[in-house]
Amino acid sequence: MAKVHCLLLCLFALLPTCLWGQEPKQPVRLELPYKLEETEVELMALPDSSLLVYSKTSNVWGTQATFLFEKYNAQLERVWSKEVELEPDSYFERFFTEQPYTYIAFSSDDTRNYKFLKIDLATGAIQATAHKIETIDLIYEYNVLQGRYFVIGRNRQDEKPVLLHINPEKDEIKLLPTIYAEESSFSDLLADAEHQRVDAVLTESNGRISRLQVKSFDADGELINNFFILQQEDKSLLNAEATPGDSATKMLVGTYGTRDLRYSKGFFVTPVASRGEEATFYNLLQLKNSFKFMKPKREKRFRQREAQRLKAGKEPTFRYRFLLHDLISTPTGYVLAAEVYYPQYRNSGGYMDASVRGGSRWLAAYKRTHAIAAGFDRNGVLLWDNSFRLRDLSTPELTHAIEVAYTLDGRMIMAYPEEDQIIYSVMQQDSYSDEKTFVDLKTYEEKEKITSTEEPRLIPWYGSSFAAYGFQRVKSSGNGTRSVFYINKITF
Picture 1: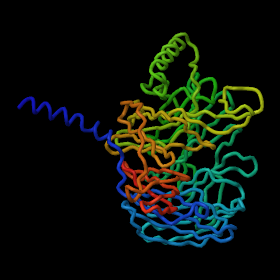
Picture 2: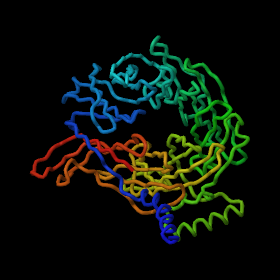
Picture 3: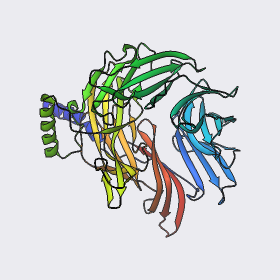
Picture 4: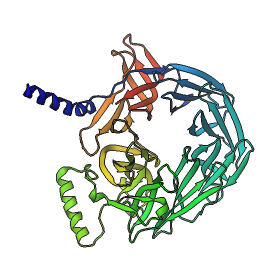
């Protein structure tokens, strides 16, 4: 009896590991009759586990277009469908959901003209307002608080980022007070509905040292608080994400550098109100899995060499650029994910990395080596770290190449689409796996075959589910072929 009891305990102990190792499920697929050459489609995950699907179908000359919004539930069953009249040169830019509405920003060929839609998620009723914004010619970020818009855009005059407040009811547009130095940039924009504030995090640099500034605004764009977080000794604060909360509890989680501000040496956590005096720094060498993208022998030699350099008071040799993801709040704290990348340049002889100098070259792409996730408790103490090796993954522009999600059962999921596959990593805190895991997208029937996939994309949906979507050509069992826009639910 004791042996049976012991066996059961072992089985229960192994159960979570077995579940984490299972292949993701694809419980449902939706196909829509959209064609790649004439339709643009965007998917938006909503807080009630539904999806909002936006489509713009244009004629060959782009002189006519149909704009459609459709809401689908978690089983990809259509809840409602609404058309909206917009000018044919209207372009989807950004969206933000503040229940019970989703707000969408549109630009146009005239970069001064913008339109904002307010969509009732229960009924599909749509309200539209048009605004002429002289200050900017491009939208970077878009948040909403109490129906007021906060927009980070590119200044039309000097191309520096600026922060605007828009009251759509009164058509009032104002430039919010922020320091716009030569090297200033926005690191984060967080609308905190619970505390009725919007926090803007800025990175300020003179090329040698860097500091952070956090400005908090109310729904009317009035300044509530302003904090400067200075560098610590030889450490410059590069970029950061703000946690939700009031000024007493708000923290920054981000990256720091030393001599060369282009490269990150690790992570830091600091209370905003402390002005950086209580910052905690975690060098990448302190992290368990930050160099697992290397082969084991190479990692061992690398760590030994870097430890000797640190002991001798020398700078680390690794040169990592981090692209941060939005901070994820968990029941016990926060998770920060970052993609490690380097620019690829092209010359007459082919590709080369950023360390190569001389000759004629131009930026061709941003290549990823790996992604890092770091989990912290609510006091900023590092609990775990993990990494995801990214093989041959690059983007022509510096945008997120992977999607991340944290589940209620404590798993960290990183994934990205690659043709008709989803490449993924399911992390159990700091338990690292180098196994390449992927799942093939399924069609309606097992005997069908995907012959091509165009513009594959992936977004976190709800819980442990993602939505994979794009355009496909599918060959059926009867030798017929159909072109569709697909949405596959992927549940980890």
